[in-house]
Image: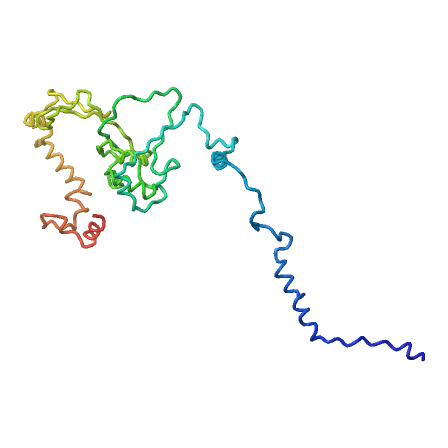
Length: 291
């Protein structure tokens, strides 16, 4: 009787086969897949019809889209700077010709595509004179370190990297040309060509006297006509006399280094009439490479 009271009772036998469907329902993988977002669960879900429709006009949307920080002075005009004057030099012909070109980083300027903006100063009076039909352009800076599209623009107007900075080019005052000059305005100096005395309709450089000043004034006057025969008479001072020839020959004789009689031309082949033909193949290939 006492032993029966002390003996522990056995747990009832459980059939695990009947619990397999329940284990599949409450398996840990179910909780992990459903709650993998953690505490941020439920965010970034769009519920259709969950928010009220906002009746905002298109003008209000435009104001919100272009809202600017009043403490940020980068978008504000400086002291004494007026509102910009905008000019679109694009023509229908240019747009049709450039519609298939590949645009690059330097294509968009002034927050738009090919738009010229000028910011006038306070109390600045714009010139009311008719613009000059011809522009005199000269490059003032080296193209070293400039992006490739600025170098391309300079090549288009004839002021590439291989040209001297003192070279002058004369371009027509057209919208397409002005747009190219606006993009490289930091590299060139632009001087409008003026005609104080006017241009005769039958202008001929062989019969009319003319002169171009550094400030761009093109003066046409009969007194400026020069006779070629008089120019030849005035060039007598350029002729070499016997004493100058002797002095130059004596200088080469006593100091033959780097001269015709010196060491720099010791191995040069002088049998050729054209010295370029006597160059080595390496020198000839270098000329072909950069030609």
